[in-house]
Amino acid sequence: AQLVESGGGLVQPGGSLKLSCAAYGSTLDFYAIGWFRQAPGKEREGVSCISRSVVQSSYADSVKGRFNISRDKAKNTVYLQMNNLKPEDTAVYYCAADLAGVQIGVLGPYDYWGQGTQVTVSS
Image 1 (cartoon, rainbow, N blue to C red):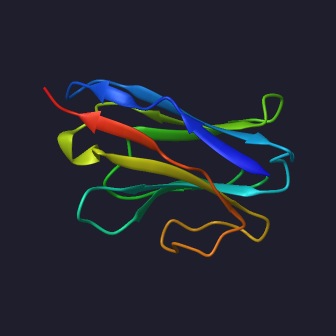
Image 2: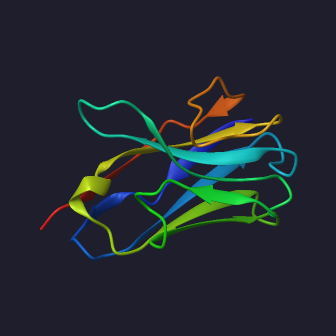
């Protein structure tokens, strides 16, 4: 499967963006999905993840209450809705997929990674 992220861009503090992680070549139905981000000069960190069954989702403390992860099986896509964005959310955001599961505290290895999409929060 190939994962392709989109939806990044430049937004002012307090604004919103919705990132998409679309899969090509395979269905995401059997995969857990995670969103990770990496800011310049910093290590990659987990942001949010969602189980295959959609029953379980988790968030990093820094984004709880502001970000929401969801999946649309019909579109074979996972979304990350980001609200009340802060300058510290600026990073390249990546999605990852794994048959065995994804945890935000574990950076890999995972079966598939996307190429990333840039999110910049600045006035």
